[in-house]
Image (cartoon, rainbow, N blue to C red; front, side):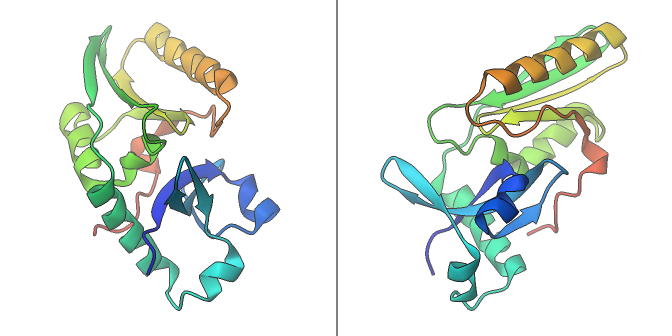
Length: 172
């Protein structure tokens, strides 16, 4: 089978383009892509039906492919008023945000925040995570998420999510 990778995409693309996907948030879905020279293409319903594989197995294989084919991002961690924040960012491979699905990234986030924090994924090249008791700091992150979302050509969501409320699928 081909080396499909998971990739975040706007949820409205699922119906608009008949892309095979799994739900992540209301606004963000997980699609499956094939990397080609300087681009990638999403797996469409018709192609998926010819693979003779179920969606759970495709997800599992795509996570394995992501771990084995894509280099790690360096998570940057900072202290902020009333808490901590971290992010990872890359323009090199276009798979920055979807790394949040990898167990090693979730483990690192749990280590930093002790299990509960907020995060945003304004576009495919950025994940911001934070926890603070300071309302001004929280407002800054919401504002920055909106700015990052509005400034990107690969928009995903200007939503802010609680980590414990997002199901990150079964452990692989």
